[in-house]
Image (cartoon, rainbow, N blue to C red):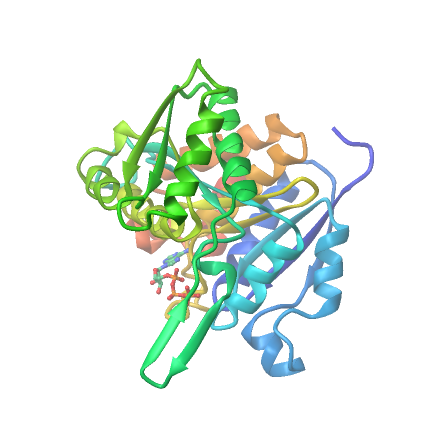
Length: 330
Ligand code: ATP
């Protein structure tokens, strides 16, 4: 355990973001690991109050911290989370989708890691209105980002006992951009002869994930396809409230639930904090505290198995009570 407290920047953001982040912080504190949590503003409410969705102080706080825990941003998400990911240089968005005992879900055999490229594709921000009736968006795919994400996915698979990595693409239509992405994945995969490397079209992967998600272990894909497939995966395991994610780069790490601000349930103490708590476990592992991470995951799994959950999963607990249930089982 570190002698000094870990410096963690906390950005609750909008909607249910602050509620689920507060639940995760309580669980992190209950591990006994020492943290110095610094809270910062960002998002729609911040924009309304200050005129900026991502204040400079928030950005600098995130850059200075050892890790960032982020809740959700509403309509200003593009100005907040996309900018944070870019400024922090987090080139990978790691999105696990794992079915849990006790949670009613479509496919109990689901246990996959979606490795989403985080810096380019259609999210590069090159969107234009040519005429009032014609708009264009430019999809950016580069060798550097594609090789980097492929290498990350293959390394991750090897380090976590996975045997197969699937590169997901649409190169039959996007011949140049996804053609380049695939060529890069293929080239990098040759450096990993111990792993099975496969390629599959994104539309067919969507169907196969619904029918039999157990056939996928690690998916590596471009930004937009990764975004869509990870929501699909969330649906397979029982909903958005369960899925954490990690944005990782060479120097910084930001952890955020896959879900958004869910304005329909915000402020009601109804939001499921599971995704945010599991983000806390990913954060612990990133900080070099694997045992504490495993304790949090274990306690969370026990709660889910015992139906000690929020209403979206059929339980009766509030956000706060769900966090306390995890703390009791730590
Ligand atoms: P945003 O625009 O910020 O993405 P959204 O409501 O469009 O917000 P999500 O927040 O991702 O999208 O969620 C969609 C719906 O799923 C929510 O309206 C809510 O009903 C449900 N949901 C999402 N996250 C949770 C959660 N943690 N707990 C319970 N329900 C959730």
